[in-house]
Amino acid sequence: GQRVAIDGTKLKAYTGWDAPDEERLDKRIERSRQQLREWMNKLDRNDALEDARKLLDGQPEGMGEPEIMEKIAGLHEQIEALEAAKARLRASKAKRLSLSDPGARLMRAPHSGKQPSYNLQAAVDNKYKMIVAARMTNDPTDFEQLIPMHKAIWTQLGHVPDELLADTGYTDLGDVKQIQTETATRCYIPENDAPVTNRPVQFTYQPETDRYRCSAGRWLEPKSKGRYRKSKDAYVDTYRGTSCRDCPMQSECTSAADGVRNLTVFHGARWRAGYARQIGSRYGQARIKERKGIVEHVFGTLKHWMGQIPLKLRGLRKVQTEINLYAAGYNIKRYANLAPTRELIEEVASWNPIRTAVTA
Image (cartoon, rainbow, N blue to C red):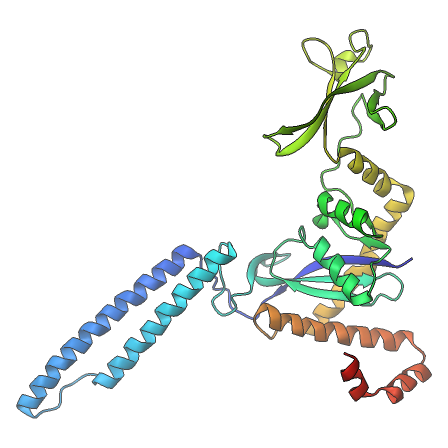
């Protein structure tokens, strides 16, 4: 079956380190307004000097009115640009904003601290090690990128992959559940907050009777179903033990005053237990280990090509175009290494740019 691994890496934006927050923008706006007031005062003084010149028929020293008006117009434009940057900062809900590339966001780089960057998301297939999808985002984390990347792969291939591999940065179990229940894709993404499995008492759900059985062989019956717990913003089911008081493991299982164990199960917990078995199996662990060998070398190659200035364009749409070119170049070189020379010659000889444009 088709197996695709996804991962993300940060690329420094083509901009300086200056990414002010709202407070610094307010200070710049106020400073520009103060300068505007000063130039307006100079304009008033210049008008007075002009009147004196007419009386004395002399030449006043200093700047003339056209130069002052140019300064005033420039300050008006500067204030408008800063006000627009402040509005963009508020709309983006980010803490800081790069003035030369508003699409970039401050992201933490492995060896250079935080800098204005973009997050490159790449999907690579396990068989040919070719880039299936490359997507640029200004979201600093990978946490919400699982579904967008799955859709990008689907769009590019025309069908969903059989298996999707990723690291813990993508672990949103709600997204994993949505992909596995709505499509034919199976995910192998380790949990970053996996439940404790070394507790002295474990509970196993019995779907036939809607009961739980503890590791001591005692049963827990349904007590309440689908109650909303505000503190957790979730719906829960509660199960209560039927024969806990004479259980030899009671002291290790519960500290309740009546000696009876109450088990709270969040909705989706049973699905999560099944997913834990899926990724905890020998096959699942092999897929998790395989991920690094599929996708991470691609980033090393692309960054080597990019050099010290990885991106040459600004704005999310433009850097996406730039990455598309890099991905296309990578896949062409990869294909050239995989395909026989005769096949490559035939592909080039049969290529028709007009037909390709019509098809696209």
